[in-house]
Length: 81
Image (cartoon, rainbow, N blue to C red; front, side, top):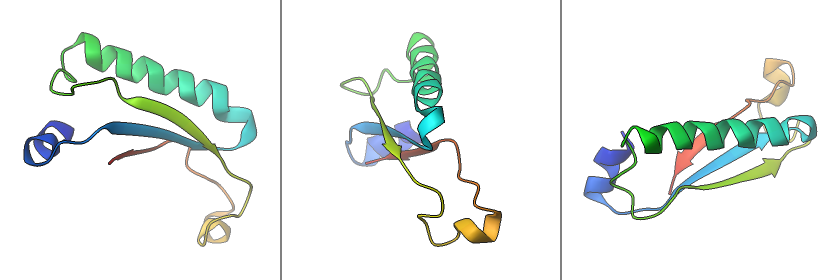
């Protein structure tokens, strides 16, 4: 999907680990492993530079629908800009 998007418009891939405090390191490491495997398999060759991986720490119930799903937050949100 990202390669098709890139063919239409160039972008830098940003991967954000949107997690609670205790999951930051594991989640960022997981994203790094995923990017490494994708790079080794040539699936990111169309990108001019490495994806940027960063984390965003969220407190419980900071989003509008958190209470409707029991306050559980998704482990990883991946987006492209």
